[in-house]
Image (cartoon, rainbow, N blue to C red):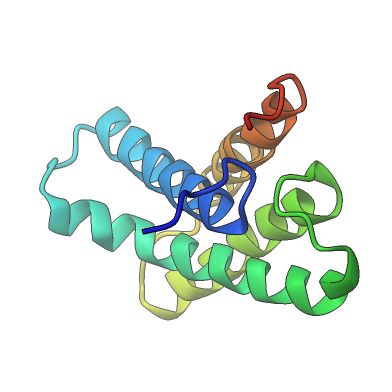
Length: 127
């Protein structure tokens, strides 16, 4: 089995998934909602789909220069599609999309999805 490079797209995709799950888990915890995995899935899936759409869009637009670790454009596109697609899917499935939630989700996912990318600029490449 081959080694996984730290800066591979697969690692970046896993980090995005973990950040979306962390966002959902923190939100559920802050509202004292059940901690069951089914509840976490229910909250996270629209945003996971949004992040996946962001990956597809970014790769399609920047295929020749694709770098999953860049804040611009990858992080920005993934972040915006995570929020927009996530909110649309929540609305279509009867989940809440209150104004305050949209603001909190937008800010939180920005910190998480852009933050880890920004931090990697300070981590030297591992050989």
